[in-house]
Structures are given as structure tokens and as C-alpha cells.
Image 1 (spheres, rainbow, N blue to C red):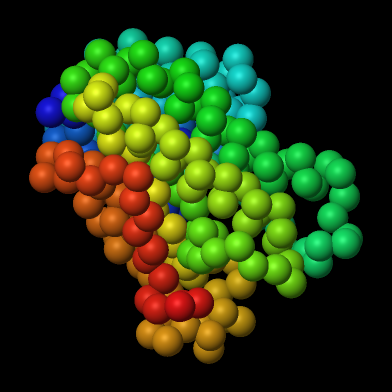
Image 2 (image 1 turned 45 degrees about the vertical axis):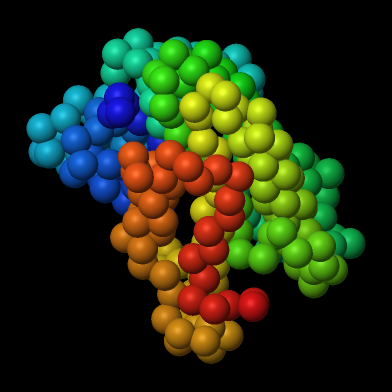
Length: 239
């Protein structure tokens, strides 16, 4: 398996944990950021400590041209591309009737559209890799069509990612590309952590390493037969 990976939003948080986990397994890594250059460079240095090639790339991937450029630079800088992890996605907590038009577009663009733009640009490179992986990030319970008290556009975007991933997974089987979804619940870097912990059956959030492990499950060579699947990392939350 070609070990060349692009992880969006990988300067901090879940994306960084995935990037470092892949670097520890011998993958050359493209660290992507939009605004946090200092954190991205730090993450890249940490990845390089594993003896792999680690590059830092900036892009606003809600812009199609920048998403395409990001993928092109990642493939050129790494010498190919076999893994894409779409981790970027903003979050706003607000009741449904109070969302502004600008906020609606921000959430749909940063979650659903950014995933589409990066994936579409990456497909020619992934097809050339002969055995590639796409891992997209949704959220716990996004596959359930239910009313939401808050964050409605966020859930709409994440449900869209699931449908897009399943559709693409079916189409790309003959290209030996798997497409799967990791759906986190409350993680240790969640902004409303203290309020959320009492709701969790486990009484603790997911660690970033546990989420990285879930991504690796889909990326590993042993998972080449698994595609179009959703793996919730939520500790039993919202079952």
C-alpha cells in the first residue's frame, strides 16, 4: 500500500492525532491548515520525528480552487496520494429558527462542501494509487433522521456526508478505493465538554487517540473489504 496521506484540518485536535498516528506507521503526511500556521508547523515537526516526509499546506477548502490546489500540492509534495481524511468542519450551537444565512452557509460549506471539493480533486490521484482510502468525518447519530433542538445545519451537513460517502463507496469499488465514515460523539477537545459528560454512559469523552484508531481501522490494509460503513466512536451516547 502506498503510504501517502492528506488529512484536512490536521494542525490540531482530531486531525493532528490522525496525522501523527499515520506518521508513526510510516506514512508521509500532508498537514493542512487554514489559519493556524504555527500549530501546523509544530504538528509537521512532530510527524517528521517518525522519519517520514511531512509537509505543511494552507488552504481555505470551502473554496473549490483552493481545495484543488491543496490536493495537487499534497500529491506533488508527497509523491502520490493514497489516503484522504476529511476532518474539517465548523460547529455552531444555536436553535434552528435563529440561524443566520451567513452561519448556515458557513456550516454547510465547511463540513459538507469542503468534503466534496477535496474528495473530487483527490479522486484521480487515489485511482492511480491502486488501493486507496477515503475516510470522512460525520458525527454520532447523524444517520438518524430526527428533529434537533440545536445545530440543525451541522447535522444536515453530516448526514449529507454519510449519504455522499455511501454513494461514492458503491461507485469506487472497481477502482479499489474504500470510502468510510467515522462518527465521533463527545471528544476530549469538544467545546461543551463539561456540560456533555453527564449525558455519556461512559462518563468520559473519547480521547483523540481513540478517534485516530477508528480512522486507522478503515485505512489499514486489513480493511480493504470494508467500504460504505459508519463507525461511531461515542461511548454509547445517543443509542
